[in-house]
Image (tube, rainbow, N blue to C red):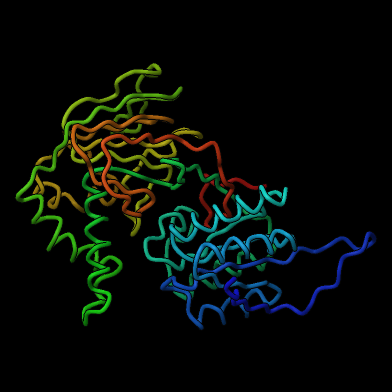
Length: 364
């Protein structure tokens, strides 16, 4: 087994006695491959949370072993450090370890140290950088009554994520991943990741592809769940649609669902994701003009563009069927092409520490 590199800032703890109840110390699990995990980050954590147990993981096999150790020693809260993929990988490791050990999940939080950071943004960390990190750590070290938001998740083929989709977004992500892999040993590798990488990949790969190929695929979307409402641009809900109803049939450029408003980089793709306590925003885009999309990129980014050909629903379980394979993504990871994909709301809902002051947050 690979040695797990750890950094512990606390002195050895003595076992608690019956007359002296344990005072739980926090734990921080960092993705050692994340862009924001640097020696400076470790120094900030050590200064702000000197009692914390800090671990680095470079793969999810290591993460599972670390999760077992953290649960065994009952650390709380537990902070994950990385982006959306890091959070989901670490969460799955903790869910697995929790089941194996028969222990409940501890309080969980996410430090914004990745690239996309959709979940961290949703959880109140709207900015990155050292100052924002110190603010988040101070929120934990203050030991005040913390606020929480319930994170619902989409389940796709046994995987969980805050968003998933097929079509334009899947194609864009697939092109970006391939571009980043091809550029890993090139002089321009620094501009091949993050937002610069997305824009470069879109400019030289995705857009030229769609100038020669149709963006449209014939799709059917059937409601398999108990919750299904059409959503109007003002956020009002239409009548409940019955289980088994055909929600959409026709050409589509993109079919995507999300349980939080954001994609990475603050793209507000799912403005209706939180209309219902247990629901996800289904967005269907029937748009054949790439120039039209580019001209409206900013209002789309802000969640304020509702063109003819955009259809929004709140659902909890749907089946997407396509006449030909569409590029797909789950949680920002390209997963290849599919002609059928079930998109459903996971039964798991995670209370996540909220670092902001939004009214939507609740206290425990």
